[in-house]
Image (tube, rainbow over all chains, first blue to last red; front, side, top):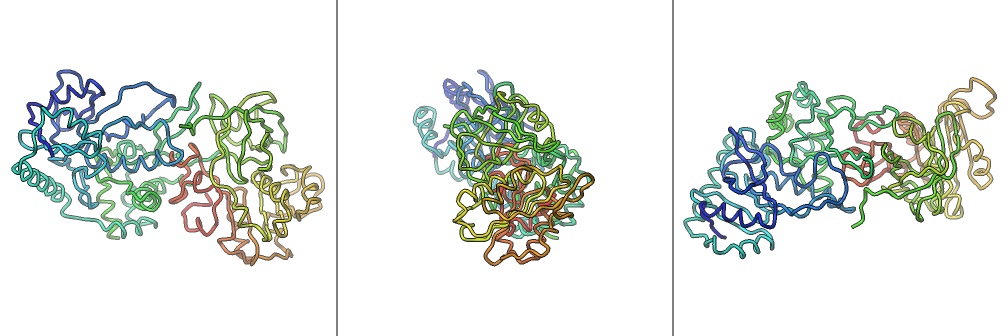
Amino acid sequence: MKFIDKKDFMGFVSALSADADIFYPKVSADTSDWAKWQTGDKFSLDGHRTILPVKYFFYSPQENLRAKKRRPAIIFGARGCDTRGLELLKKIYLDDPEDPYFRKDILMFTADCTSAHPDCFCSALGERPRAEKDFDLNFSPLGDGYLIEAGSEKGKEILRKNSERLEDASETHKKELLNMRAATEKTVNGQNNGVTLDMQKLKEKIETRNAAFENYGKTCVSCSACTTVCPACFCFFLSEGAENKIRYADSCQLPGYARVAGGGNPKKELISRFMHRFGCKFSWRPSMHNNLGCTGCGRCIAGCQGKINFKEALIAVSKS
Amino acid sequence: MTDPYKTLKAEVIRVTDETSNIKSFLLKPAQKFSFKTGQFVQFTVPGIGEAPFTPSSSHFKKDEIEITIMKAGRVTSKIHELKPKDVIGIRGPLGKGYPLEEFEGKEILILGGGVGMAPLRCLLLSLLEEKDKYGRLLLLYGSKTPGDIVYAGQFADWEKRGAEIYRSVDRCDTGEWKEKKGVVTCLFEGLKLNPDNGVAVVCGPPIMMKFGTMKLLEVGYKPENIYLSMEKNMSCGIGKCGHCACGKYFACKDGPVFKYSVVKDIEGIWD
């Protein structure tokens, strides 16, 4: 494990920008969202998840499916919820036959959360507020610098090339790391009242129509904000462009999602679409892809126009 | 890496009017095209859109494929405007077809309704090609009126080649109809079947599939011996876009042919 002092951090970013486009969480007001790094930009990896997940770096919400020339990218500051969502997306998009337009030239430089958005509930799913795998480098923010762990050969190579900016992690750093991680876990746990859902029980409950769905689905307006901001939602619609196929992000919450020619629609009722999302995330993807379709990031709660608290809905379903 | 979204060009060779709103399109792909009976293709009208269809021609034919299409929406309306020499795209083959090896030595009952006869014709032709491998072959086919029967001129030939054929129409307002009247399940009346060593294959409108399946269960077919072709909104065709979700399955990749035993508890399968 290596340590980089915060005063050397932007120099490190600048050096990497020679070979790749750099993206980082840009803070504005009390939140943050992705921005492309320009010379002179300064940023910190403290804090928690961005408004949008990282998925749209890997495929665009609206994309002409043709070969593209672009520089590789490095994403700084993706969180554990981002990598867990990406794990499912990779299982879908890179499964045979592989989607050639899903980007594979992006390095993930994740960061431990040092705070939590009020809607974060990863702990309720038994997850931790940090990336435990699927990163090239992981940054753990400490007071005056970052502890860096390499998770891939490419990550290790970057650490080797930048060794003059790095020092070996000390015992004090490692102690600080444990304290920082414990403090963030306590924050997330605290705002979720220590709830940990029994995922097996939840899976069974979710497969049947449940009064809790009817109750929580009442204010859904089928706007699709929840799927748009979800790091694990993967649906798209393939359309014809003038020369190539065009792919549009799509949502199971929209009325036309499952409609077939002639007008048949198994998801005509709003409640069936509302339930579809839970079924997909907590039953079908675990069954078929061995992966939850939810990361506990709470972006859907923050984005919901009907003020539906999906975490509370999950708890209600599991208790029913 | 091959691009699974790329289409193969195919020329329209012949257009056949089957009924007032159903046409068959004989296509010549730019290269040999192999598929298994029951698999489907995405039919691309350049610049307009794609729609999924199971070919209706035998899978033993590799140079040309025929696809039978009902005018039902935006893309199919454009397809119906196609003429010989027009060039379209096909993408596939996609999905899993009928497991013909599981049918060997068994009595095969094919239950079709309306344009659902299209994929069943492919199956029937493929089975007739190797008739000796299979047991008794029955086709029960229902349509709304005599005018709605697809492949009207071909039944006699199939019969000659060894298929037992029973047909019904819901109603006959004009002309003459000497066969049965009623919904397709009326064809089971008085029919001696061997469900213990038989399989049934169903394709048609959802309501017909539902009652057809119920009838098959009633006469003794086991859920694992009933094969359904599920119509879902297939967009990518390769298990990525999510539209054709059928419970935990993607109909495009895990189907479109499913055993009834596999999908029977999924909510809304007949919708």
